[in-house]
Image (cartoon, rainbow, N blue to C red; front, side, top):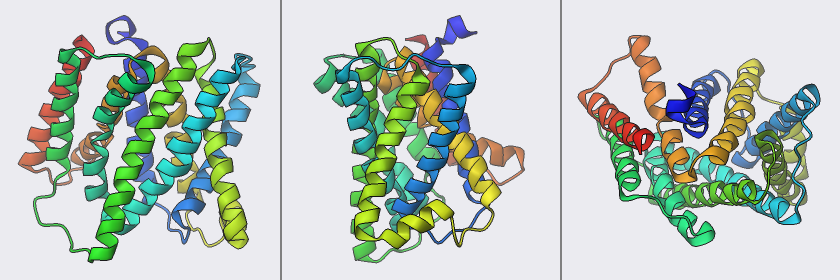
Length: 299
């Protein structure tokens, strides 16, 4: 199976599953944290988990070249510090559906940045698979009923944040690929460096402007259902980011990002198993996305 899929595609599928499960777990806890506080909390917890995993596995494949460190640190600052904070802000302002629709731009953006930064081109067939998957995801997550109205100020802010998140996450992905192309290193070390760089950046910003919020992010004061939060961080940030970097290491980042984008469809599939209502748009969109992923896997 691994030979047929390729390690990169297999890791990408597992990462999408991990993120889908973490999304469902995040619903199990309530919090009064800002988007930046949430970014710090999950970053600190997941970094500690990665350090423990490195110690247990005795992973010594740390990057040796300064250029690799620069790629990973820049990718962490842009993709995690800015990208994840913008994503959480978009969720607060325009909700998950609108945010996910705009996030569907990420695979195409990764393909463009891949050309600009790494001079790597995808085949026309691969671009067709990306387009098919993206269209399928957009159709599937589009609600049957009209979305709740959002006032103009929150709408503009949310749209800009969602666009910033898609651009920054795409840039972060390609920068990580640049580091992994540069030398042999473990995807776990790459994930830790990228995550730590992003978390430290957000932590410094919050400490300078609102020191009390930084302390709350570390202590999780006011957060109930912490066990759901820890489980979500383990799956979505620790395993998810590790698998993401593993996927980027062994396949094209645009293909990996396209497979990651199917995470909302996995959430819907779990809902179907739990006998939650399924619409015709979900079925049609899901089939199109599945066909698109199939094209990418056979490319």
